[in-house]
Length: 248
Length: 145
Image 1 (cartoon, each protein chain N blue to C red):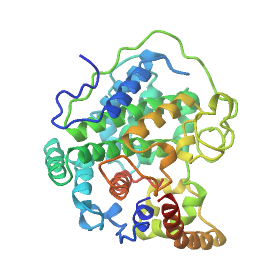
Image 2: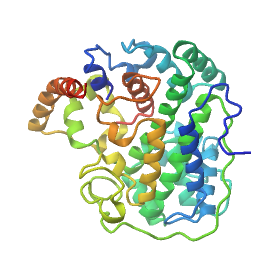
Image 3: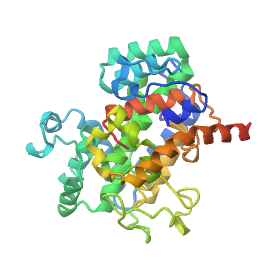
């Protein structure tokens, strides 16, 4: 059976959504810059597992997540515990993540490079799964990992500035990274994962089909090829962001 | 973005719909069913989501329902990138939206601490920019046409 066929959907799903979801599944199944392919697929499996994890449920109800210690329910054995913790928190309690928590995770062996790639895989898989939930469709089976080793590639220009993690400065997306954003400026949310440039590339592909091409986002006067108006899209986007208690 | 996208058409929108949800009429066409769908997807059961989806389908059609689902899923991703990396709101946006953030209450969200507080000069510049921006958008749209 072809991935993301949407045969069960009573509503026709756009072909470009289908194509970008397939592309993302192929990306998840490849070795990354810092994780092996089997570990990336295990990250994807933990994304799905997080919502039923008993530790995450207990933490979510606590006044502070640090008040509840324990072990997460997990599905595999290839990821270190600190990585499983990061995936689960990103899925279930992202608004209460902190710089202190990330620094402790760094000290426990989850480098910023490993963390950003984990974040990139986590949010892409979670987002696609949420589309299925919204449309009443069963989630797609996870892809089979391919062979190979992580490249270890790190952009030379990445450095600490305004985020918890190093990022490529807005005017330094040059050379190998020249395709990451247009022009000499970029919004922080695009730069956020630039320590692992492929995460930005995958984000751009998904955002183009699920929302708008990145260059169109700040331009509210640009014509859009959607069945909703720009105001309708922004109302939905704003409500989802607010319910997630996201200031950005 | 919601404010800007309505200002260019001279529409009056109640931005508190973003934080208060279905209790408020946003002023956006079919805003109630769109917000209802988003809320069902975020916190509802499978049957809640199905009911909200069918309401949306009957009001705006299949293509808009797919678009709404994809926008919801897209922002489930974007908020986690922002919250997971501690990025601040980009400086110009922080200046322009400071008053609005207070008005609708988003400045009370935990991740607001990642964005530095504005000094007095920046706050004034932001207010001026917020008032002139609709004119700029209207100008650019007229030029495009």
